[in-house]
Image 1 (cartoon, rainbow, N blue to C red):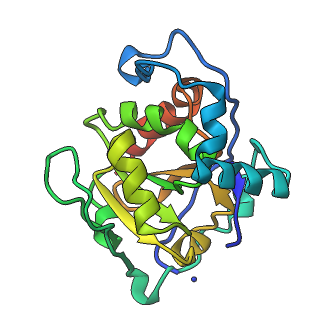
Image 2 (tube, helix red, strand yellow; image 1 turned 180 degrees about the vertical axis):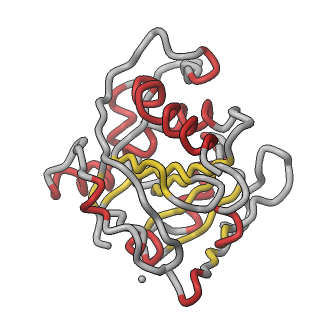
Length: 227
């Protein structure tokens, strides 16, 4: 998880956050990321300026993966008056249905169980979890919503065009205002929301198949059981 510099809409409640970055062979096959066709040479990492920037930010802040107490998120602040907010889309992106990828607003986090993933293209840990997000997006029980964190449309577009789009909607948060209101202290951070837009679980740090099995899937089941 890369910590970044970090106002409100939604009333959120939730539980604690824990996790590890290990893989698990008994994760359901639908959630196993497909391996890349060919691994890139190690030196390619150092010629990708976006990745290098993310690594430098992580090193500067002394963070790799952290375990965060949910209480520290301070969820419950309003993102905007009357609980309304809207984030514009990133132009030029298309969803899995082939249609232009929309932005997100308050209505998108109500009516169905949702996963809200706050991320940035410059963040190496966000890139590391991308294949897992692509696998999660195939779960018909949930909507996967993305919130970009202090990034540029060009960076976001260039990355997702090559890596694939796991999101049903993607909101651009260039100054991190909504992310800060949600209590996000770094990226990636992922929330599981019930049909009423309340947080069931917040997961700080990159997702991997083991965390999906141990934390995300139980949170999705809990969110579905809520009325």
